Length: 107
Length: 531
Ligand SMILES: Cc1cc2nc3c(=O)[nH]c(=O)nc-3n(C[C@H](O)[C@H](O)[C@H](O)COP(=O)(O)OP(=O)(O)OC[C@H]3O[C@@H](n4cnc5c(N)ncnc54)[C@H](O)[C@@H]3O)c2cc1C
Ligand code: SF4
Ligand code: SF4
Image (cartoon, rainbow over all chains, first blue to last red; front, side, top):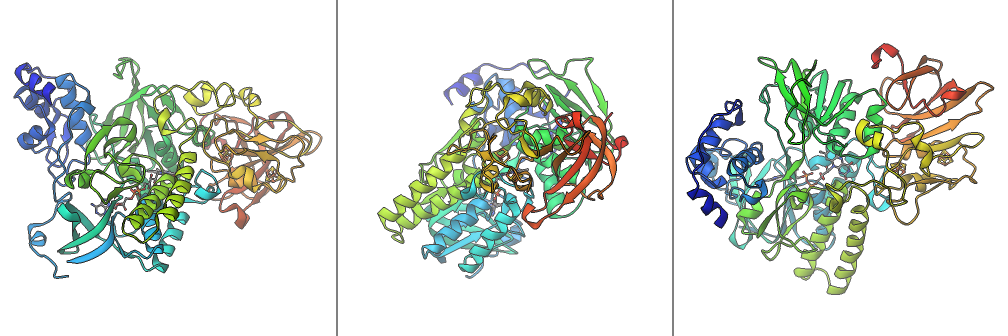
């Protein structure tokens, strides 16, 4: 984490790339460019990116894009993907409708 | 709130094995699975498994699953389906969504056996219908009986990519090629060889550049990669496909464990983020266990053993099993698990370049780059020898944990030995009867029977054949060599579908004598194969 604090003080200059319009998070329709931009805006952890853009917060809960987002952020920051802390696991791990969530069985 | 001795999340091979073991020791268990059917990945595995007898080698995966499920039912294990575990909280409180209600249950111990999810890669066109995970394609064909498409490109040459490629071909899809950025095929050589001899090209050191189409895939562009895995311009190649399957690895679905407060670690050799755990699979949260792919991507064979170890450890913790019998059982299972983790493809060898076998024989580079052995290479392996009359030729040339070929031969012609990763050796002094049991039992479809003196000018070659329809006796077709190239005319002499062969049919073809070490597959019409 210390390393990330260092990354935070070193601003990253935005430059566009040819595949910036590639959709990465399919559920929330977030593009590669938006993720790269978020890093330039100062988001340096997966948690922050997730709150900023909603990547991995849709129907599949990041099952599909989790590693892809990590790879893009790591590349932008110049670190190894495994050095980035994964997003925290939170309940519910699968989307649950509010009406179900509120309906507790008596058993 | 209902209380159980053990709550198991996931009814895959790991979860079901644990449930059976726990119930055997008298524990009150509940198993929850979000799917409508139990069995996890196991029910999609229609191929024969590797390993030894204790690992149920040569049994098809779904049959292992059926047996497990039957055992669970007989022991009265409660398996609740369509039951999503959405959270695990303090004091082992588990939240389950079942139909339209939410249930809270408590476990004195919990086993998380949630398996893994498929990795994806992003390229232009990856969101088009027709691009899918290889596991998803396997679910479509083997569980739902639906073809994903007609012409398929597979991305990824690991065992998942190879196994699914072969199964898609068995369903009648045309496999246009297998692409991998790696220079060497990642999965077992025997799996690659059975695809290569059908004429499927391997594009190693290639990547997918883009999928084309407006509302579904109508084609794909691949290209060779440089050191940084970027496509080298000018190497692009257009392929006519309607389906792209992605098999680039799996990631453990470990979110529930993170949520439950387990200490986590990210280990690339295990496929991603996994909980830190001891040899019994117990995490840093006491009484919370983990088994199977969620603890590190491996195999169903190992998942089943891990599940049992966790259940025994939990039984000991709760007093259902004494210290001594529990420890004895666990060490036996650990030895069995260790046996599976040996050989060239062992988890500890991931990413390493292995140039020779344990026996000191040079590995075939052609096998690793093109998917098949060159004819002259086979002679240096112990499964090859020439002899008068019918005899087996074993083209199994990498150290993998597997030995059914040794166990089934009634004449003891084949030897693997105590070390199950050793290469099979054909004993030159044994009298092979040509019964074909070895051919049908080989999980890698790597054994052939050759008779060089079928008549004055012809040899017979018996091959494992798992395609339908079976050609009729007398059919004249073409023999293909290991690379899938037609080499000569071949006449079908017999097709045997003995129940003991468990659906691996034995096709014997007559070929000119000089073709006996070349002919390794049969095609009805040459126009259906690559030229
Ligand atoms: C194409 C292919 C070929 C393979 N070939 C072989 C082979 O030849 N030999 C071999 O040994 N292995 C093979 N494997 C590997 C094997 O299938 C897996 O290693 C094995 O299934 C892992 O078992 P598991 O019990 O850990 O997980 P899974 O089988 O994945 O089961 C996990 C279960 O947990 C459920 N689940 C997940 N999350 C939740 C939740 N939150 N709530 C409720 N339920 C949940 C899932 O629905 C699933 O049923 C192959 C795999 C693939 C994809
Ligand atoms: S054909 Fe039968 S006898 Fe011959 S090696 Fe195979 S199993 Fe043994
Ligand atoms: S030859 Fe023997 S060891 Fe090799 S894959 Fe076949 S059964 Fe297994």
